[in-house]
Image (cartoon, rainbow, N blue to C red; front, side):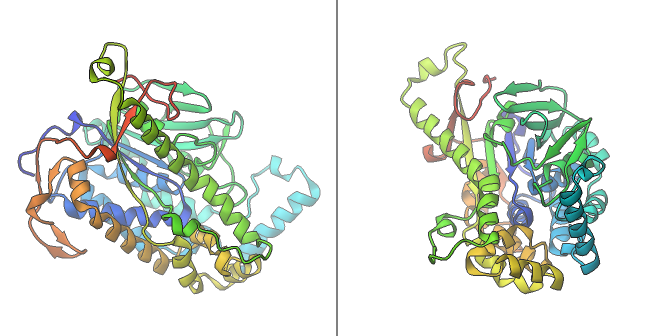
Length: 430
């Protein structure tokens, strides 16, 4: 890296939302970002936040963040060779066993008091994550200065709070807002599994005597944790496609179970993030009319939060439908009966299709979408984009961009953080 500036001068946070198998898209976008940077560049993100499947990517990245390009390559290898059986049991015997257990719990009542009940057996996921993530290394990468904080969000069934567990360098205080809590912790397997515990599908996870489920539930302000941890700029890799995926395609028939489930999953994983970003933009527009001398007064606590969002340019449900045949026969049969293989039901499939072909398709899409914003991303991270790419596509070698002093981004990409009375929950500047 040439002409480098202190990355802590403008603290950049990476936010990766939930979305099940859709999180493969995030890995493709990260791979593109890694390809843009000079070889052996240090981690461009001082803060990494993840929720649900995004928590898997966040924790894995944090554990190897001392070599950012290598950390992204490890993620790409895992997602690029994924099989449903590595996430949940999809064989006939395993599926029959879990369904019979659920039926017994329903008929007898009280079985859940001895063990959590779910529609899917995610024991394989525990094995995969234990092999994939060296949680002890997170402490070492933070101590070595490669990372300021890792944040994993889960939802408490006891309090109903969205709890953001953060492991940091000791410079951040816990916080509490309406339905939002920041709690220091030594991030481990339980935190990631808890963040991924989709209601009904995956079992509830116990952390320090408290039961947790998927972090996307009750996460009313997905950006707020990064702001509490000191972010001045936020790069968000979402998994919700642009509006055409959410367009009306009502044939007049009653919705299938899969269509209803897909609608529910969208509400959990996508809608709150989009609304929080929209609120931040509105706050920015409102505060832009306030004179600079007023905003800079002591105690005003108003500061600009720059945001950049990378999201899928193609409908995820259509991609999932094209790869439906990759599912194991048992799961494919269940999905067909639920209506997931019908055009309006494929959305739920896009969250559960943990198969190599589908994941690789999403990774290539994420790579392409990020590269389409190459100049903006490099500017956002403080690099000069005029020196050409280090990678062309995925493999070609070219010159690397050089580090340069920050310049002001376009006003349309800026969000202003207000006092904690604002909708997105903000913190005191400085």
